[in-house]
Length: 201
Image 1 (tube, rainbow, N blue to C red):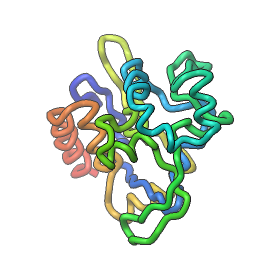
Image 2 (cartoon, one colour):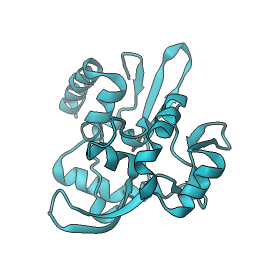
Image 3 (cartoon, one colour):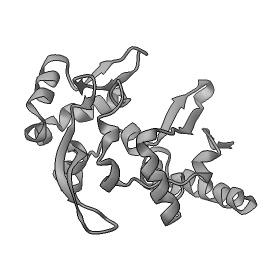
Image 4 (cartoon, rainbow, N blue to C red):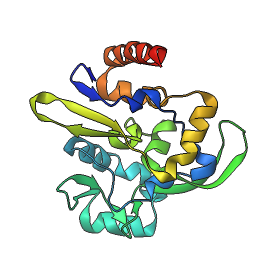
């Protein structure tokens, strides 16, 4: 289906999803064979805010950034964040956090250094939109069209379970980053379309 200039896969509306950090501990930031997709503007934002998070990065991550910068071109020709040991994003950091649902402490959870700094009010930029939108992946087509698809990944199976338990759909879980990417009016139209589709189901 198409909403504005965005092609939307139906499962983005019908499937359930809510990150469960108590189970996955942020593994999506360290699994995979390449970094997160980024734009040239986002590379500039990462470079501008690097000093604010530098001390939170591992020595290995600092070394990678010193050698190749905050991003590189992967095998598909896409710009992605630099990674450590063909695995961890260079901007990952590990901290104990409180679970939003249970209030219990989640030890050694993988987090984004930029997002932590943003949430603490130390910087005004959060993180690459591709990270914020996960598990949605974006693809650009001709004529200005953009496609967004729900990317199923085994490491996120607990997010599906929690989403079902809480009754949260993928598009609802991603409300904030979707508005950041496509705007308030677009998201409102998405909600109207979703309401019709879910009513039919």
